[in-house]
Length: 266
Image 1 (cartoon, rainbow, N blue to C red):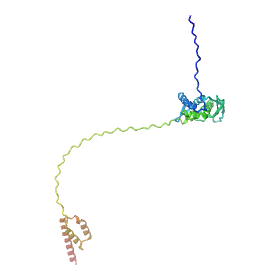
Image 2 (image 1 turned 90 degrees about the vertical axis):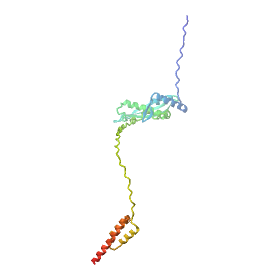
Image 3 (image 1 turned 90 degrees about the horizontal axis):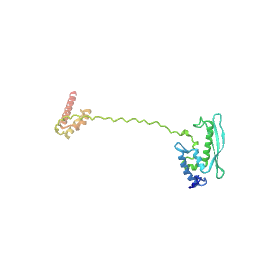
């Protein structure tokens, strides 16, 4: 008879939880890399105006990897007749050294944007949450920055300005379809009469120098008026020989007539 083979189960090995020492910069830089991955994988950040802010759970994870835990010291009701308001204080306790290594204060009020209708317990709870994030921020801000995030807890941000401005859509008028212009039919060709051969005009023979001298001599006669003299002198260079001859004859006749008339009057 075969004996039953007894197998002893080995105890399951627990994964070693890696811990970092905040006093050693090389270890905290490794923590920043691990923290960036953890926040991204678990979506523990909030986008405000295009920047990434870590939620309180991300800050708590960073603290726990360093052996630092938060302790709520007190929550005080500081409300008034017109405002619901709480103040909280949180201290950070280092499990290794047994000492307090940081603290943070925070308040929350129903006068804040988006909290007008919050109940009292929610206002008190948010004050504690903010105080936890603030306490961790006071000592671990540089590690969060090294992880690639903004060094302010997301709970401290005002989300009212986290809206994208909606710009009216630009209405573009449709382009007018190009107007097709029908090609004009070519005009019928007209018969063009042949141009007549140019008739040669005889060259103009202007008044000679002797003719001009005679005209000027006659114009200087006392019986010729200034108006007549001016008119003739303006056109003397335009006279051809024939017209110059006619002008001389007219001047002589005018002089004779006027001289004879004066003699008769005398």
